[in-house]
Length: 410
Ligand code: HSE
Image 1 (cartoon, rainbow, N blue to C red):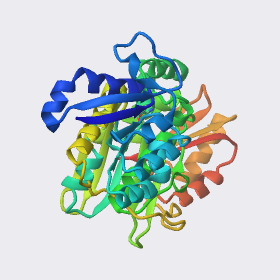
Image 2: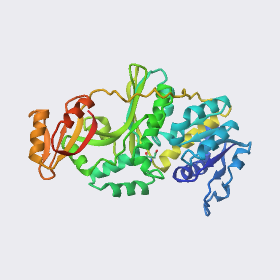
Image 3: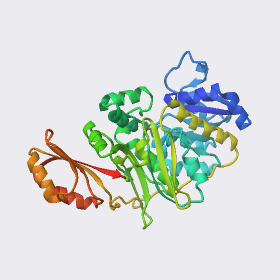
């Protein structure tokens, strides 16, 4: 029998406990050992559950119990998760986590400590919820050099954007629904402002390119600037708006990494990834583009990924899963230069006629645009261009009182 402790009994933690307890037979058969949840650490009381007797409030009990071989950390946040996880690894207990904030900030260090102590540190659930992505990248794509990773990495924002576009629902109502369904982070600002997707692209890039990418190195913009009008304009250009995270190798060995709202052509496969679903595209030099798709958030999909890692730890109780990357460096990420691309531009003015004539003066009369005399604004999708060049053109327009620019994916 292998004894396991779970730290945290929130949305994911309760799912992990339920799967491990309710499907104990199925799990035992697959790993050839009984997996017993011995403790659940949480400061709150949970009376009336079939497993209420397992709750403890003192982390020391887990740390000092030599019978505990695998610890699940599903508390979220850096503190005290970092100290707890580090202590467990140093005490030669394998750790499984869904905590992307922790892995994005401390992954290289914790992987090193796990290696030094001959235990495992696994975190499949930290990216893409129930989608198998980290293990396939580390194992199945191991023969490739990975050049680019991008996609829809946050279920909450994808759900909100989808509700805005398809159901014409406003932002706050869509967010409330995502919270109700258990998709959103404890503080949903982490979803909406792009930090959650940023942490996930850090983990993907660190694993894919072999060197740690820290959240502060990623240029991050959330979806708070996306309006229902933008969604409607994008639709007229046969596009949808998605929050896209991306990391790409540059010829000089550095990388670019960003998260931002992006106007995506309906011809692009990511445009049809809706609701809580995530899709991650990984470009390997031998495979070409590979897509990973599934539910990116929610109690059971995420818990299933955590439990699979627990099962892997149990199967490798005296062996190591080789998962690691180097420490990062301050100059490794360079977001100053980007490939040329098309841009979605929405310009507002107090004087629509002036705006129109200025637009034609600068962009030429053949550039297609959607004009809205009522709201005194004009929307167009630029030709493939350099962002700085576009900025200079927009700066030269007279009478502009509002501007929205989104990158695009065609
Ligand atoms: N809040 C996250 C999301 C949960 O919406 O994608 C899964 O990481």
